[in-house]
Amino acid sequence: MRNLAAKHIWYIAMHIRQFKTADTEDAVALWKRCGLIQPWNDPYQDISRKLLVQPELFLVGESNGALVATAMAGYDGHRGSVYYLAVDPNQQGKGFGAELMCDIESRLYSLGCPKLSLDVRTTNDAVVGFYQRLGYSRDNVASFAKRLIVDSKGT
Image (spheres, rainbow, N blue to C red):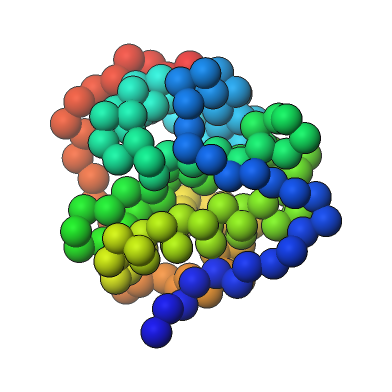
């Protein structure tokens, strides 16, 4: 049984499409406004890497001609993942994040993806609540990481 985020009709339309290289500066600026960039992650490197692997799962949302949302998704044959889900702070609360997640879930489901996992900083209560409202729950796992490539200090 599919358990995808509920689709809703929003009063302000958002068009979802695949990321284009011309979106780079707008995406990085959005990530900065949303506090997603960390010193150890170079967002330009992250974009370059994503464009080499499943670029069709790097999505942006536009409203009134402006880039207002982004999400990088991936599927490794076992599990899907989402990173850089961002909605412009001035546009939050309009359903854009939920709409983008629903689109991602649908795309991953069509690829045969049985489960979608994502990481949220434990201090980000608003985002934890957002995902809980979409039907996500905490897994009883510990997240481990090891940096294989050290990026230059992020911008």
